[in-house]
Image (tube, rainbow, N blue to C red):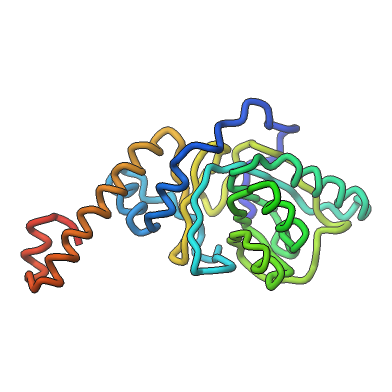
Length: 234
């Protein structure tokens, strides 16, 4: 973590993209392996986020258009200021988005129960953080889909503030912009650039149709080599 570009100024919430298109629902019917295969054939094999970022509930997938947040540790601010800035971050998150946070910190929890409740109420699809999480039992009860790196009870009060909203971030060497798309499941998480979302989604759906034909052939006793040569997929 902590390979985000240096903080620039303020808010980039003006001119946000449409977070209510149909791509997230289509992608959630797919899986990351198929999405990766398509990205690889398109010359984009390095869109995978670090394998240390894991789902709180591995039985649920998550796809959505991204809203980015970045922050930094700051021990000079008081508890009121940190909580005020944190709640402002919650307020800025657009409904139906997936919020991705680069905290540039590996000591604190950057998601907890009340924040999860807020996101669920606002209609946020999910949250991914290159950092920590606490209150995980309660978060599971809220239904918010969360991906993160580690557990800790230590919160952000008096220690951390968000500093950028909607601006480009980097996680594990992968550039992420507001408007790009996340696809995540128990196998991992990857980023789809917004410019190619239609092409990627359509190709992934075609991959799934081809895989179904291969599966049918295998279950009917077709030799795997023959099945592969017929469908060029395995």
